[in-house]
Image (cartoon, rainbow, N blue to C red; front, side):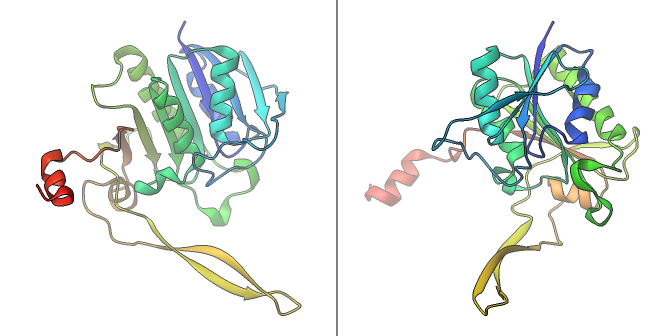
Length: 259
């Protein structure tokens, strides 16, 4: 049977990761390694300054599941060292969408990027949510439609693989999607937020700072953000982890070296 690794950045107790396991448990042997705690926006951070602790956790549908007191990328490294290779890696289902070139900030997408660097076909999957109604660990969130699309995409990848030049898929599901919602193959938007610093004062008059993001509201057609936010479609973005610019190297050499 295919071996499937599932991880996330919301933590092993998130309902989203359990929905992911349920979606693919009959497609292969499922192994879960995920952070013990919330690790959103951790990017590709690794824990190098202290040892890691692992805890066996009961996750229905998984052959084995570990919670790790580290980052999502730590979880991938642990899983590969502990269980060897996988036929498919899934990161999610994340609470909240992961869009644009800012996916490199996301722990969810970065875990999929990490598995992709090991040659494993990878899927990062996220569900748009209404944060005003979202409780801790996804309580009250309906993951059934996101699970439907995850299963559909995972099954296709296991059966047919990726085209040449694709290392992972970044999938975003609208919160109002149904199983009949259209899938759009998209490119990454340039950016979703414009981060800045907000200064506040503590009760003793000392300043402290929050990183806050101002949302971009306009997106180009064909991008993941446009498909999700404007067209209300499921966006599937093929990602290649080779970030080398596709340019004429001689032209760049001429600019830099005066050739």
